[in-house]
Image (cartoon, rainbow, N blue to C red; front, side, top):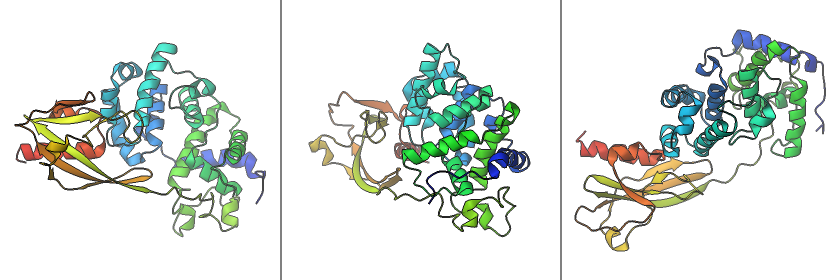
Length: 354
């Protein structure tokens, strides 16, 4: 296994061939490709980090209707942002969006910096995202290296090293910098081409080059992974983190057509979001009636939730400082995790006889 990324004839032609492929077979009608402001590019990049394109296509437009510009996002509450983000998971992204918007408004006069280094200093923006914003919004010369791009470069140049190690990633970053096209006018098409090629052709599972009916790969003659017969083995698959199974109870306390929610701690699962209490008055919980269990999968956790219904209409209840009674519809407007939203919607349907 080579320690360094070997140069070959493709180094000089990679950008040209990729740009030609992008113009012919790349994606050209994504909503964030229209009116490429820094705000719109930034929002799309953050959404696409952990969410499928098909979902983002819908949620991106919805988010822009609620927060059409940086100022409206910065002036919102974090609960407003979490509510609009609900269902997309990885809620740290939403909190960082809000935090970043406020930093840009207060420290950069409401305008994103054009320098990738300055962009990377903002909350929730890593090196690759900073480069994407700099390229698409400002035409700056910068290399991206997200998961899709790592896979493309590793396969084409036959990088068999463990890319989860920082030293190996550093080498790939250096290599990515050498591949940038020389003409400034080519930077957008090249960067978009890298994203498109990794997302639609050189995919993690079932890359199109392995299909007999697939279109021809532009790097077919030069791809080291294909020559070695290691398309599916490169990049190296690191050992998966063990999935932890958790069982939890949620107390669905209802009183006078209001429901009790509590603000979760700022650390841990669904940090800072509103959810149902996991603990409740021991005397009252004896009256709890089990509801249908709810399953929910997080990155490294598989949750089995047992909701317990508590009718407290005739009970005097003392609640904790982090708890609050909400009208059902108001609860839905909060930043709540997806399983909480599902239960709330079901309760509303039962209440309304739907």
